[in-house]
Length: 108
Image (cartoon, rainbow, N blue to C red; front, side, top):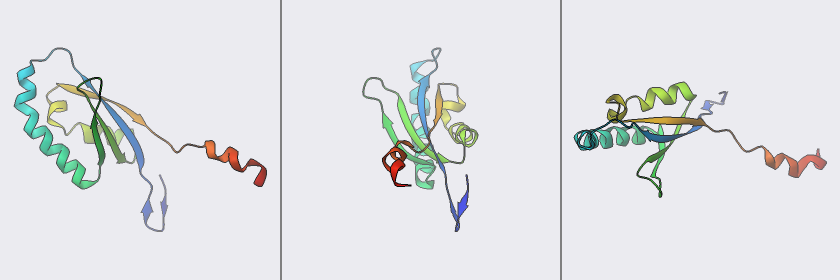
């Protein structure tokens, strides 16, 4: 991460929800409103930039902007369903696509 004229570059991170197998479906209902409220707060703060559900499974996909995987984990750990061991997330850091450089190799 670096700063350029007071602009801090954040890393985009994809978080793929993973259900934890040993759970009671009623537990999801118990925490669903609190979960939605916390996601809303994180969305308003700009930490969660996008949120989706997969088309093939009832699992969420979050796009976060933060400094690194560690900060993403800290953010996700604030979610009630994560705190109560109902779900977890696979955290995937992204980087910019470098392939466009090939278009300009002969122009350097």
